[in-house]
Amino acid sequence: MVPWFSVLAALAIAVGLYIGLLVAPTDFQQGDSYRIIFVHVPAAWMSMFLYVVMAIWAGIGMGLKARLSFMMAQAIAPTGAMFTFLALLTGAMWGKPTWGAWWVWDARLTSELILLFQYAGVMLLRTSIDDLRRADRASGVLALVGVVNIPIIYFSVKWWNTLHQGASVSMTAAPKMATIMLTAMLLMTFGFWMYSIAVVLSRVRCVILERESQPAWGNPSAVSEVAEAR
Amino acid sequence: MNRPSLWEALRGVVRRDLLLAMRRRSDVAMSVFFLVIVASLFPLGVGPEPAVLKTIGAGVLWVAALLACLLSLGRVFTADYLDGVLEQMVLIAQPLPVLVVGKVFAHWIVSGLPVVLLSPLLGLQFGLNGEALGVLVLSLLLGTPTLSMIGAIGAALVLGVRGSGLLVALLVLPLYVPVLIFGAGAVTSSMAGIGGEANLSLLGACLVVSLFFSPWATAAALRIALE
Image (cartoon, rainbow over all chains, first blue to last red; front, side):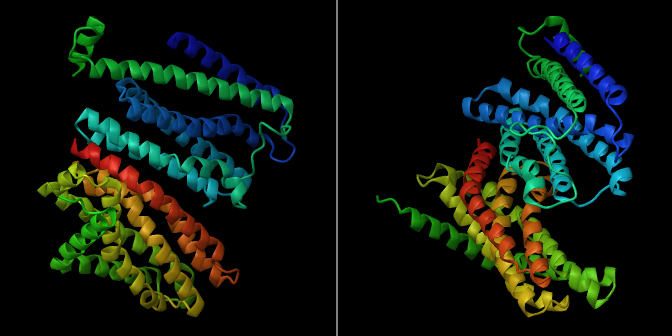
């Protein structure tokens, strides 16, 4: 499955970037700097979405005592943190020419920063507990507790009157942007999504091999590779 | 043998923890002194301009209260974890979340209540006037229990983990941010003349939600730590 998703991701991101950077017209107010949204918005969406998915896997793991779902949660965390960081970074790059500041203490920016800390907390808690079973479940509890923040991030632009603009795209209303820009953005989102699946699946493969390196049922050559790497 | 009722169990836990705290008063005094010292460091660092101090006062006091709560989190479960009392609490017939509520309440009385009682004095140092002072006390009264409830989850998660003191700060501080924003916001908006009611209501909502969810999450974390 990993090659399929990787190819899909590469295609969608390539086409999305092509449309976004070359085909889409220049914005009459913001000039070309607006083009960062083709990375920024999909990254921000993925950062929230992946956190929820991670929490769901952790919740399934807690409920059914399934080890694989904890491994999925473990594999998702770094990708989610990467997208959160990407969203913050591209946001800063966009904010400098548009708002005149790299960073403002606005509700959405702050809550997205907290999301990054939460990803870090979940990963740190996992690495600092030696017992695997306990590490899984403790970081699962933390991930579930942190879900409270997701609606706060999502609705922060509605609840507080802040500098960050409201949502330009919604399921219910007609989008407030040109179709060509929307196409590019949705393509990029799709590409990021496929990328996440590909990366998470290959990471979870490594996690499984690492954890199950003792019994003989795993791929023998890969198992010995992991053993050698240690 | 008749089982003590839920209420008796809760009271027993609170009584025991308060008694233990009273036997080691220096621990309690330490977090209070910490609060006072942190709050006094800011005027020294920022400079003694009354106008500046007045604007940052509420935020500084809230951050100081937050750090004082954080430092005392290690005491909630660690001693009981080390001497095995916690294991008995998990095994006992009373539901663990109720016992957790008792322990967190005792922690709040020892570490949160002194902060609330001391805050008017510290607020005066920062030049807050009558109404803002009242709102500050009220916001801390609503906010510090929430801090204890959220903190208990973190404290239970890191039980017996290496470097737990620093780790608990990393886990819990992001979750403290909303409380900090609403708490300091209540004082700031009451000073701006638009009244702190909205922020105080939000703080109350945070308290109710954390009171409902945190004991379960903490109990789950304790079971994980003890298995």
